[in-house]
Length: 307
Image (cartoon, rainbow, N blue to C red):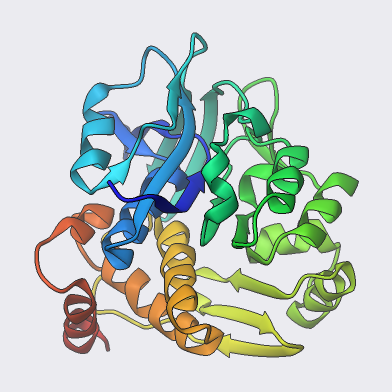
């Protein structure tokens, strides 16, 4: 495999989905998993590597799935602690998450020296597994693009494993150090203490954030860059099969297109199409494994399924 130019950092996860009271087979989850699949499919011939930690309970078949997608898992460490595991309970339009276990943290020592030459380092924490100091330190070691999906830095669990959001001063320092941050609307409101998009952007800009993506589910997204705010409506489809991995697909496809063209407006347009392809396919993120020109497949899918 060629030298890695894209590193995706965060816990690979074991997901237990419960749909309308029925337990489903265990599945591979986590931003590092979903985003590496999308990045690898869109970015060839550049190689994509996952930096993660998993426990003895992590199924080997999940790693094999990533390897089949030409994703380098040599930086995934097996440790004694149990893997990060979520239970996701779906009832009609509602999704309840319970964090069952969290694997060992990812520290600066877990990064190879080759990160100094990386084109992209994408932090995708899901359970507070990446200390803020790790992100800040790694940013200082590379000239590449450093991106952050903030969800796992402000996501905490109570005694029952139920999740709640909480920000802090360290979050501000991390935001000030990365190049691009992605937040959903709720996360953005928690971090900024503001409710309206323009006030949120004003807060982020004050910290020194140069580029931010704010996702609003079916209400589309907003992009802040070069002092401008661009709102992008969601593509309305005839049918949606599921939203698992949607935010990861949106951000990773945005990052890949931004790397290629350095045009944020083009990148968010493409990201809207890519996430539509994912949520409109019954196979979800595995629809990216289909053979053929993935860009052509995405364009054809949107043309055919858009209302």
